[in-house]
Amino acid sequence: MSPWKTLSRYIARQFLLWVVSIFLAMTSIVFLLDYIELIRRGGVKTEATLLTLLAMAALKQPYMAQQILPFAILFGTMMAFWRMTRSNELVVARAAGISVWQFLTPAVTCALVIGVIAVTVFNPVASVMQAGYEALENRILRSNGDQLSLSHTGFWLRQSDDEGNHSVIHAERLGSGDIALEDVIVLFFNDDNRLRARLDAREAHLRDGYWSVRDGTRWAPDKPPEAFTELTVPTNLTPRKIQESFASPESMSFWELPGFIKLLQESGFATQHHRLYYNALLARPFLFVAMVLIAATFSLRMHRRGGTALMISGGIGAGFLLYFGSNVVFALGLSSTIPVILAAWTPTGVSWLLGATLLLHLEDG
Image (cartoon, rainbow, N blue to C red; front, side):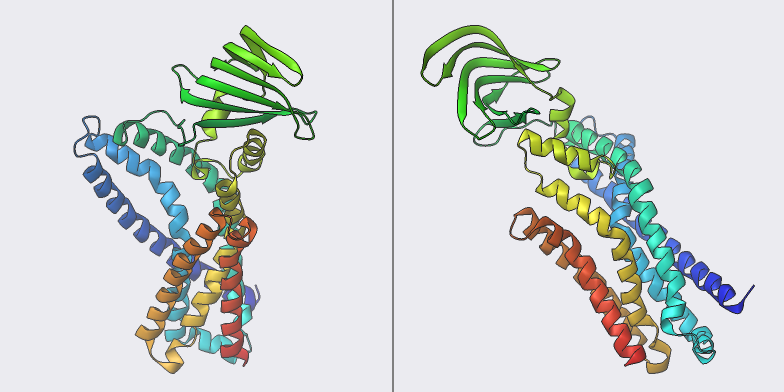
């Protein structure tokens, strides 16, 4: 085996050891804090037993682990390279003609693989557990098991067919049953968005493949109003699809999100939150690589220049600055102030530019 392969395996092993250690330590602390917070919130709830709250904390933990992982990679990379710099291992590697970009390659490769696995394998598991957590939270802590809700203007729904025709459904109230609407207005539009009919009805119930609209009046251009007892309006929506449309994107799997976003668009629901979350997942492996570059900037030259505490503080500060900056950019994306794709990829792009620029300046400048 060549010396370079031996060194690469050693660096990768050190990187993974430190990342896993810091990741486990951080998740343990977050789990304990979440459990304490759930106990505080459930103090006056009769169903909120300690065992139930413990199960809720466990269900929430995979989602929190996804949020912790970038910081674990940042701090784990810093500690791994700081230790190898202090022990002069990287000094010897430099003397042997190995550049900083070469001994960063194993860490970058590991971070990229971790990111791909986290998005494609771990995220679907975490989304299922997060959905279970949200269901328990709604039932036990919020005393609200129904995800459907009304805005101040009522309940709105849009549906379309393959021919380009679509209809808009508005209801003043939600009735009892799976999907039951009261004081309903149904507006029918053709493919050029011209109104072709309107229904005003007392109630509407979602059945298998259609809406059952009852006790109302049908209006059409150039025709007198026509009263009816019951009409059917075809639909491709199901109770499950409508219920899921109110679920948070964090409870949706990476593989399910593209189709679900399309369904939301066809149903007339806002998609900014789901599209932002999906693009953020796509960018996550590259964000992990950027964390390695930033961490290397703050750890590779500690031994030679001193100021260890200052450099570590700088790395931690950079991590939290990235976190809060990402939240600001995501908020701008959710409010449609900036495009969703730009909001999702900006933190990763800025981190890449910052890490690569500083490394070029410090090592090759």
